Amino acid sequence: MYTIKEIFSTLQGEGSHAGRVAVFCRFTGCNLWSGREEDRATAQCRFCDTDFVGTDGLLGGKYPTASELADTIEKEWLTMNPSESHRYVVFTGGEPLLQLDPDLISALHQKSFEIGVETNGTIKPPNGIDWLCVSPKDGTELVCLVADEIKYVVPQFNGEIDKKAILQRLKRFENMNFKNFFIQPMDGPHRDLHLQFAISLCKERPKWRLSIQQHKYINLP
Image (cartoon, rainbow, N blue to C red):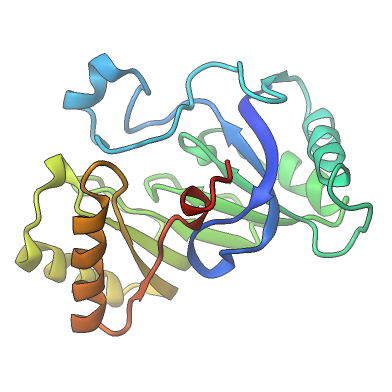
């Protein structure tokens, strides 16, 4: 059984695949925050801007089998393009690795989908993921130490900008087995300030590149 918040087609707005057409499948639930505002202040992740509670989004619901969910994802892709080439699905959340399993990965590979996953990195991923993006949250134990990209949001707790502490974290991440390194400014009322801070970090640590949430600038979901 898979519990899904929403499934929708759009362009990837972040990281290495920014601008790429994709179907996003958002799972409900997360291991770092309940998704409810009354719990935000005590959560391990306090800055999430995504609604992953319930099943009331587009094509949301409970899918009993991997094949049923894969069929729905394929139908959403076909609303854009009938081709079997360049098919790309991104599993996100919440935390997708609470639910993503080998059966679903296999079902989508059989339909010629490349599979991307956006995870907080606290759960070991199953085999077969084609593109793994880890977005670490301060104060959590990172167990995904090998991935295609790392996307670190700045700042995190309470929006406090502690450049020295953040630079230390960046240096530590640089010694892990990530292929691409991105710094992403936190969204919100201070987005412009966070953007300038992220740019300054990239200048100081040139291994890192800037990732902005392009979809928000061009009003995509």
